[in-house]
Length: 322
Image 1: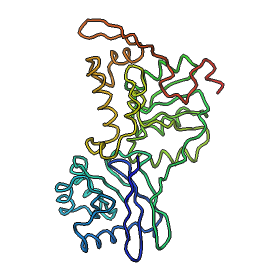
Image 2: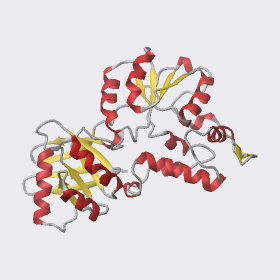
Image 3: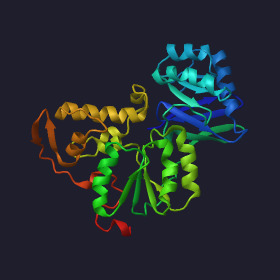
Image 4: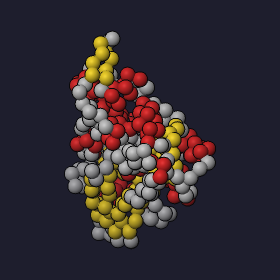
């Protein structure tokens, strides 16, 4: 759910957008990114208590002043300047992760921040008006193929493998996000569909999207995370939680942590099971409804059909011909 903040002076106006705690703003040289920082700083000096569409807005470089702002504010929008070395950036990231503010980073070099594909924007417009537009708003290619590559090797991979191999797919794992591109190249065949946690790829998103755009035969499945998909599982059945307000996400270190936390809470509150991504017990329960808690075996009567997982893929035996 996008939030909109409008900032203007007599000379220029900006339409800013964000949907979660972390946003990355890119743009060509001269697009107006540095001017945005300067404009907000001038407005801060002239009107220190002003709010814009309900948000206090700050612009800063990485400094003690920034740390003080982060610690003293809650629910503010803080725009971060790119003109700083990476070591200084690393120093401040623990404070950024633990804060309850929204951040717009004007840089591609984001160390350790788990932003998602929908959190990357470009600055566009003319001399009088600038606006943020989502950079990857048209990344979905036809999902043709019978080879799936999962980002990691945890429960999401094991469940995906068990479900889709019976429909003719070959399923493998990259094991971690930094190894996705080498794993795609290693497959050395066309029509590969990548399943990754798009809400938390972070800086990996840029080379990955460049790769997908340049190469034919590779497609990206539009899924935020495996836990996002689990909200459609008949045992959980809480898809209304898939689109949280940005203010809700401030309570979590990342959007990915939000989905994991929601799934964990539902499984524990309803069934007394602790969610662990590598647990065979969790995998069996989510696929069959059979549960083993302390040696006590139970079967929950919910009918679990395979179609809850990645519904845009074929769930029929002719998957290899789609």
